Length: 170
Image 1 (tube, helix red, strand yellow):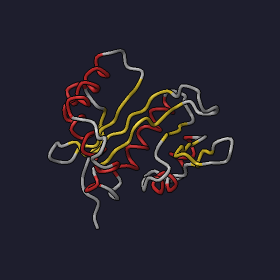
Image 2 (cartoon, rainbow, N blue to C red):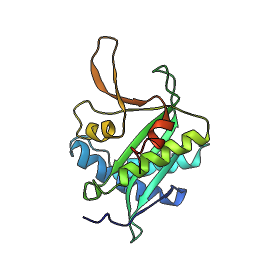
Image 3 (spheres, rainbow, N blue to C red):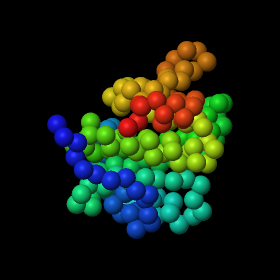
Image 4 (tube, one colour):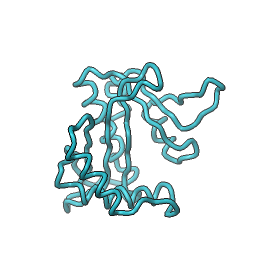
């Protein structure tokens, strides 16, 4: 199967409505409809995020027709888990675009942006039962365990140079 064409770019304030629509759709695909946020809430959140001083960044994946098909948001980690400076705060890709390199390229862009800012480590917090965990492990992420040795869905890359340079991300 030939990979579909798409491009990755920085998210812009004018993307707020499209990001909200994508965020709701991908959340429902990943977590089910029960408890899914409404479009109006997500649109307000994205608009507010773009309006205030930005200590975060976001990349979007765009299909050839201009439709947003995925996004990844990065921010500095609050220090709650020692040894990690960056956080992959959110990453969602429409299911129809899975296994076409969209997620890998989004992670690569986030990792490279962190490296440009001298942030060399990154973690994410997900659902311990998520099917996405296989994706993170394929990209070389390590499972982060609680002091009791339990896995609650956290993953980390202690050296983003290895993530970007090891060929995990193409």
